[in-house]
Length: 186
Image 1 (spheres, rainbow, N blue to C red):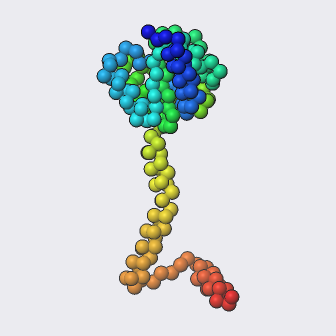
Image 2: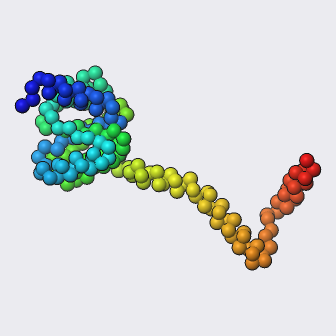
C-alpha cells in the first residue's frame, strides 16, 4: 500500500513523463500473463519508452494541467500509460503487436506532440516503418542521383576505353565549344 508521500512522488513522476514524452498512449496490460507483460515492457523500453500501470485516480491527478487531462479524466477499469520519449511509432507498434496477441490490450486514446490522436491515427502511426527503416529509405533516395551519375560516368569511361566515339546530342558541341572559348579568352 502506498503512503501519501509515495503517491505524491508517483503523481509528480507521471506528470513529468506526460510533459516530457513525445507520445502518450492509453491502453491496458492487466490480465496478460506476467512473462508476456515483461516482454511487452522490454520492447517498449528498447524503443526509449516506458509503461506505467497504477490507479486511475493517480493518472487523473497527474494529468491535471497537462494536455492529457481530458483523456485521463474519469477513467473506469484497468488502464496503463505508455510513454514514447523518442520513437513514437516503435512504441505504438509494440502495443499494436501486443493487441494482436492479447484481447485485453487495446488503444483507448493517445497524444503525439501534444496533439490528440484518434484510435485510427494511433494504428496508422503503428504501421509506419521504424526510424531506422525511414532513415535508410531517405539515404537511398538521396544517393540515387549520385549513383546514377556514377554509373553514367562509368559507362562513358568504358566506351572511351573501348575506342567508341561519344557524340553528345544535337546542339551540345557548339555550346561546349563556346563555353571553352569563353574560359580561354579570360
